[in-house]
Image (cartoon, rainbow over all chains, first blue to last red; front, top):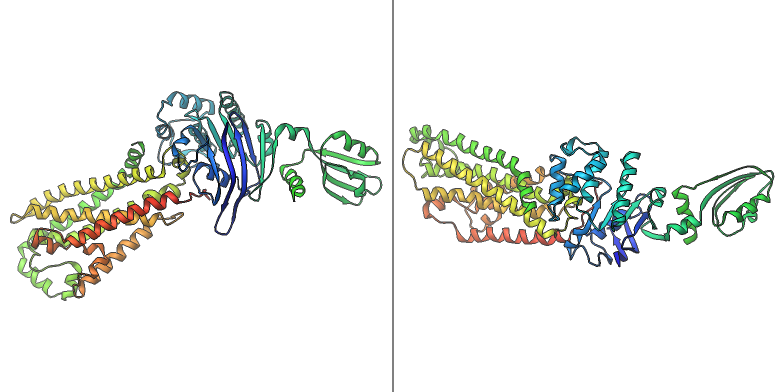
Length: 293
Length: 267
């Protein structure tokens, strides 16, 4: 069963582009990564899915139902927005109780557990919390009713590494208990660890939807070489090379595929220097982008 | 129910402040009533020296001014002005504050429909106004009883007070419908003060002209003429109906628009 189904979803803002023809689905029990640079349309997709904004065309549903027509399907949904703002003059515990009151079940035990894990002081006023601590309130708020679907919009910004780790463990636990997770981020490495599949979005369009295992297989490498004599583009005319740039005796490119094939090619050249790095997300994007375009 | 209680709690403080303002205003004016009665003739002579248009603008009626009802009716126009500001603020802010304080992402992804959110908020605002008016009525009637020089018709006193509630309902509904047209209202006060004072000034200017019944429809402040109420012990049905119609149309429109609205991300 698909917990999230997005079909040909398009959202057009007055002038600006929103998202164009986004199609994806998330299966039950899956951790799904949604990757894209800022302004690519991640939040727009999520907000349409949640029923906060109306699609221009296409459809989005969770648990097979549209959020706008059936608001009650959101009962099994936990959502953590990218920027967390709550009623400032409330105490943390009052806000969490208010949040829990929408789900008609006793969440006190879970609230205390979560607060302990995330090291959150429930007695404080929300006003007095730092950005990172507000984020923690958001996390507890999103998880306190033990939702079956967790939607996270850039959840880790503002959290220190220790908390990030605890948070990921928490998500893993929830996932093992059967919750599906939809996770948007602009950091691929963050998502890589957890997700089974990822979708890349750029300029409002899904440019690639892939299993993480496939991504691992086609390891991306950024290779820079400096040769004794001139390099021509023909030398590296093999499958998997992209973004090829030559400047005199040096060459830069992204390689995706079997690492041995490129090593053989490189071995044919007299090298002065070589470096092989993990490319950053933008470069992987460019890899997809140039290929698709 | 949880949303209703949450809203009530959030509105409590401002409601108490407004209550005090209204009561203080009434107390201030009523406290000078005894001295006005003492010098009734001089006071009337002084007021009759004013141009008729100014008197009309201030809602002064020479026949009644020295009776407690007449006096109260005059000062009541300031109280309704205050009350209208309270109601308009409430109306403009009650839905828009979720976007302004950026909490819409919290509330509107809960398993409740937007209509339920609107209903809870409207009910909370309605309760706040009703509460304010009841307390105000009780206190003002105690005040009036303590400064009165002769007995007065308590039913008329109640009817005058009730117009505060009617006018507040109208402005509450107007405020709500105005607010749903904005994607993000940065501040409430300029809009609510602008509209309330605008309509009040229009009302005051209308009163100076030939009292044409048709133009009175423009300003809700002119819907309930205290002189008419004192004379006839009833409201003017056509204006009462108009007021009710404004409330109904505005509320229905608010539900429709709010349900169809895109809730944008914070920025």
